Image (cartoon, rainbow, N blue to C red; front, side, top):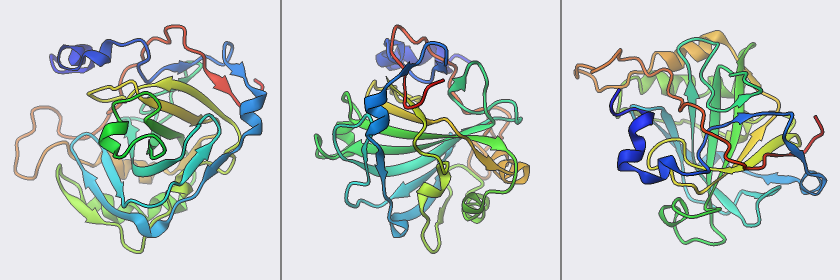
Length: 259
């Protein structure tokens, strides 16, 4: 519509920038970086810091209380702190992920969003600046039930409508939403995939997807994009919440593995 991604640049000029996300990862032109491969990612989360899940009308978002840095290494020169994670998914299994791999689109994509505590004092400062944000991305394919994701299902059912929240009981370790193999990934310099589309993001996209069952994905598809009692302008279901692909514009996508 007239407020969709094609019009975001009218109110958010960076949306028409040269390093926007998401992109298609064309594996025939990615660059294998041995030095990057030798510099392993360091990921460590405290499950007790995972507090609340909210349906914001665009996705579900799980907020994380402040703690010491918990992401470093790989392409990152500083220490980063997890602030939230969210997901993008489709109406059907054939679509939903934001990034594609050689044109292939997974059913969903999870983003773990971190901010640079080494260079900035607040996340609001970091989000506007180059290298301010680092996002770990996991692709989701339909398969067997995911034990970790299942712990979020009761919260998702409680936060069915926009602006509803649910406490994550007993804590939750976000690392369970990452694949077992964290050595193999692609990385590039991109942007937030929703307005204001700041070009501040280092994306780290894991090659191996995680599996989530059809029933678990259906819980996401039952979320509503409007408040209880409010008449939705559109279909009402919160689905297909992914941004269309953006041009690479000469950027280099590095890989920690050889194709």
